[in-house]
Amino acid sequence: MFFEIALGRFLKQLAKIKGTGGSAFPGHVLEQIDPDFMKKALSQVRKGIVVIVGTNGKTTTSRLIAEILRAHGYKVFNNPTGSNWIRGVNSSLLDYLSPFGKLDADYAVVELDEGHSNRFIKHVTPNWCVVLNVQRDQLDRFGELDATAQLLRNVVASCDRGVTLNHDDERIAALSDAAKVPVSYFRLADDLKSLFPSDSQLYDSIIGESDDDANKEDKHQSADDVELTAVGDQKATFTIDGKPFETAVGLEGAYNQQNAAAAIAVTKRMLGSKLNLSKVSEALASMTPAFGRAERVMYKGQPLELIIVKNPAGFRVALNSFASDGWATMTINNDTYADGRDMSWIWDVDMSPLRDKGVQMVAGTRAEEMALRLAYEDVHVDAVEHDFLEAFHHFCDAHPNEPKRIYGSYTGTLGIRIKILEPELGLESSGIGIVDWE
Image (cartoon, rainbow, N blue to C red):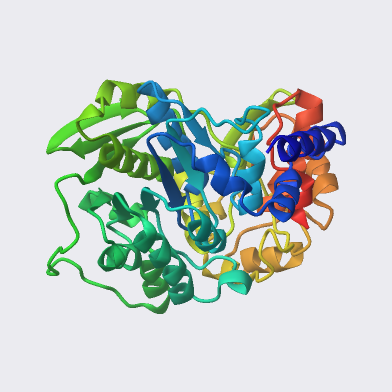
């Protein structure tokens, strides 16, 4: 593997010099010249491999799992940037392998795109997996939900030690019948469920139907379940083994506290009696946001938040998690392959939380469509521009004394970070690379 690693690192460094981030392109080259590169590297993991799949929350959950394991003293490989195709895993491995291909890791924590997860399991058998949710996302790639759920079912069936599922997403809980190993769940207290609607619940609310679960028998539960019982401002309470566990969570947004419940549940399955809740608390409290996951920086003297939104559920939860009052708001809607070309999903998002303050800038290749959607919701729009980089500068110049928040598609938030914020603020590279846009 010496030649492959040397070549991959050269390409990765070249990408950084060119200003395109760490890039997954080196991983793509490695995949072409050595299709078994990933398999050979991950075969060296000593204690096991956990895979994180689902529509929303993969990057944050995988980072939470990795940090909990590290807090327990384990050496962990993970792909932390959100580049979750096989090429992204290969590129991340370049940062962990010795020049001769040795991987010094107790655990591997691997986030995978729904489609690439099925390619992964053909080469590597995961020991555990956590399945977060399934939402209408990138319909041009995945088709309807049943097709996406089948991809996730294949991952569940491939695990050889344990599976952790989202109890409150009915399509995910139903995957338990595919598991050949013990199943546990992360779940929500009843009074929190309205904050985290499943795709079916979103659809039912749009067409005026309801699904009364009160009298249904709960067939999906285990002694190892973790329940999120209270959410707060960077703090949360969970029920673990029947006892309350309150901890700080260094991430904003209620959805990140649900991700924390998933991370605790799967590490509880992985570590068993060795799980130390004080170490869990230490890891959760020290977490910082991943790129675009409510990432906050100071820009020209004001806070600036970047929030990736790419499907109805994610956008809806984000709008309900962050108050618009006191913030200038910008949206970016691009339609490259990386974003998903089908923009019809924005019509399934309740935009009313933006109504009082309005949206100060709507940008991107599909800006007019977003502006029309907001108009139907009686949300005032101040300006519309196609070029999202130019739009960002105009947005900042027009609101110099206000905190700013951007709800953007993948390439929009990434483009602002790589092209503007990283060079101007000296931020650490997102590690993804512009090549992924195309």
